[in-house]
Image 1 (cartoon, rainbow, N blue to C red):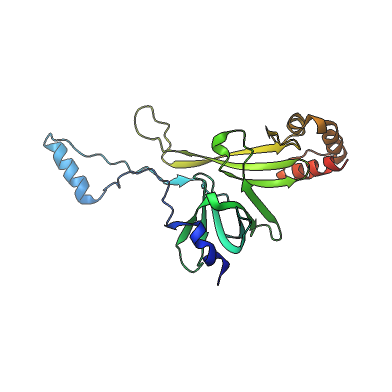
Image 2 (image 1 turned 135 degrees about the vertical axis):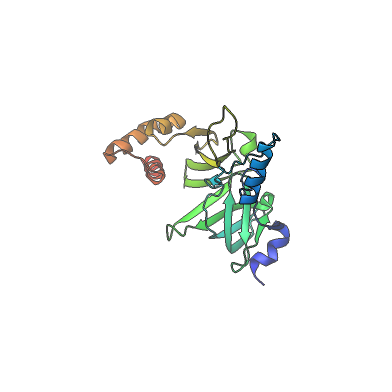
Length: 246
C-alpha cells in the first residue's frame, strides 16, 4: 500500500480547492441592455447604476513555491512519508498535498502532526530544501509556522516566509488607486546560537556579527578573505559554515 495513503488518516483534514484570495466584489454588468436601462433611469430623474470594473485580481502568491514539488514528510512520531507532491501556503500556514497528480484535488494536511518536510527543488536539481517547525520562534504566534533551514551546524540559519494579504483599495475619494488584492512577501532571517537563543538578522556581515557576537571576528575574517560583497542566502550560509570551522 502506498505510504502516503496509509498515513492519510493521521494527516487528512479534507479535500480542498484553495479559495481565491480575491476581494469579494460583485461582477459588473456592462451589457448594452444594462447600460441602456441605467441611462433611461437617469433621463427620468431616477437613480442610475454605476459600474466599476477596475478590479484586476490578485498579485503575488501565498505559496513558498507555486508549483507542486515532490517532497518527503516526517511526522512527529518520526515516521517518514516519501514522495508526496506538496505546496506550503505560508500566508495561512497550510500544507497541501496532491495524492493523485492526474486530478486537481488537493488534501489539506493536519500540520499539527507534521514535524518537517523536505522538497527536492525542481528549479534547482539535486538541492534538498528542508522545512521544520519554528519551535524557538521569539514570537509565540510564529511557533506553529515552518521555516526553511538554510544552514545547520553549531549555529543555524533559518528563513521564515512571512506573507501579508492586502485588500484592493480603489474606491472612494481617498483610495490608494490600487485595483488589485496583493500578497506581500515579509521574509525574515533568524540566527540560532548554540545556547538556543534566536536573533532576527539581515543578510549582512554586521547583522550576523550582532546576532552571534562570539563569532564576530571569524565572520569578518572569512568575509574579508572572500574579497567581494556577499549578497545571496547561499553565500551567507557558506559564510556561517566557514566561520564555524575556523
